[in-house]
Length: 216
Length: 303
Image 1: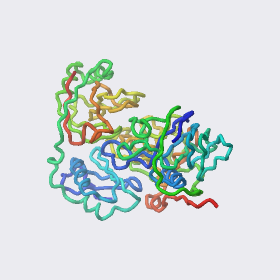
Image 2: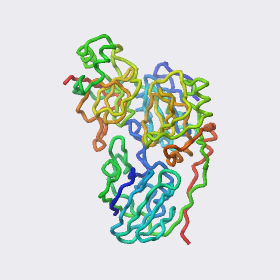
Image 3: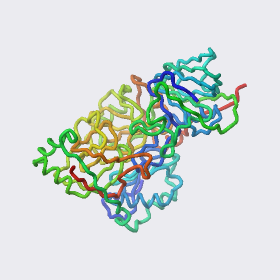
C-alpha cells in the first residue's frame, strides 16, 4: 500500500491499494485525468484497463500479480501539467426541462426553495466538466453543479429511465445514454446521442470535455 | 450456418469480450466463463477468441441446414438431436445437413456454451463480437436470438479433429471465496457478521449485470460513497442492505460500498448460479487468492 495523499497537491505521487487480485485503486485526487492521460500514454503492457472515477483510478492488471516496477515508476512520476491536458471540447446539449421529460424537476425545485424556472436557469447557466464516464457506456459524470441544486439520489431507483434523461445525483449532473434502471433525479431530456458504438470515439462526451445545457 | 427454430430464454453471441474500454463506461463483458467458451472453441478447431453462443436456463432449437461441427461446454442441459444421436458435452459433435439440435433445461447449473466450427461471423463492435444487452450493441443485432434468425460461420483456424475436453475439477460446494473490502469500514459489526456468516439466495432479478441476493440484511453506516471503479465479482450493498454481486456486464463504476469481492478463480462459477440457489461467503487473503491459479481445461483426441 502506498502512503496516504488524499487532498495533497497534484505533484505528490499517487497512493494505491489492491481491491482484488487484479484491481489496483489509485488515489489521484484533483489530478485524476492528468494521471490517467499520463498512464495511458505509457502503454503499460501489464495493464489491461484504466478506469477513471471520483478522485481515483482503477488499474486492471492482465494477471494477478504485484505492482510491476514499470507501473510503480509511472504512478510516482510527478505530473508536469495538471490543467493543460484536460482542456477538452466544448459541447452544447439542448435539453427539454420538466414535464414528462423531467418528472422530478418540480419536487427538486421545491426542495431547493426556488421556482422551476429558476432551477432550470441555474442548471443551464453553468459550465460543466466531464469528470469521468461510468454506470452505462457514455454516461458522463458532470462536475460543476451549483451547490443549491445538489441532492442525494432517489431512495428507490426507477425501474426504467428514458434514454437521454438529464439527471441529478449528489454533486453531479449527468445524462443517461440508454434506457434502463436509474437512481438519479430526472429533470429533463435531450435528443443528443450520447453513445454510438459505431462512432469514433463512441462516447459524445469525453473526460475533460466542457458541457453547456441549452433549454429547448 | 444455423437457423434458430425456437429461441431459448436468452441466447447471446459471446466471445472473450472487449477489455480496455472502462474509460468509456464500457465493461469488458464477454462469456461468463471464458475458459469454458475457449474449450468449446478448441473442440471445433477455432481460436479461443471465436464467437459462440452463451445459453442460459432454457436452450434453443437450432437447425444446421448445411450440417456443421459444434461443441457444448458448461452446464449440461437436457438435449437431443433429430438424428437420434446422443448429445455429448465436452466433445466434438458432427451434425448432418438438416439436423436439428434441441437444448431444453439444465440438469444442474445455469449456463452452457455452444461453439460452431468457424465461429459466429457477426460483425465486431468495438473489437468484440460479444452482445452487450444493456446498451443493445454487439452480437447479433445487439439482442438475444429470435426465431428465424440465421447466423453464419467464419473460417476455422485449425484442421478438423475429433476431441474431448475435461473440465477442471473445482469446488462443488455453496461457498464462494471472497477477499474483504475495500469498504468494510463502512459496515457495522452486525452488518459484517450478517454478510460473512449468513446464507444467501440468488434472486430472480439477476442477470449478466449482477446477481441480486436475498438473505441477512447487511447494515452500513453510509449508503453512498463517491463513485469508484469496480470489477465483476465486486459485492456492493445498496441502501436496501441486500448485496449485489456485479456481473460481467455490470457498471464499471459504482457508488455503493463494496463489502467484498469474489476472487478471480470463482467469478466464472457465478455463471452457474441460478435463481433460488443458496450461497455463502468465505474470506481469504489477496495473496492466497493470487496463488489459486485459474483451473485449466485438458483437451485430448477422441480415441
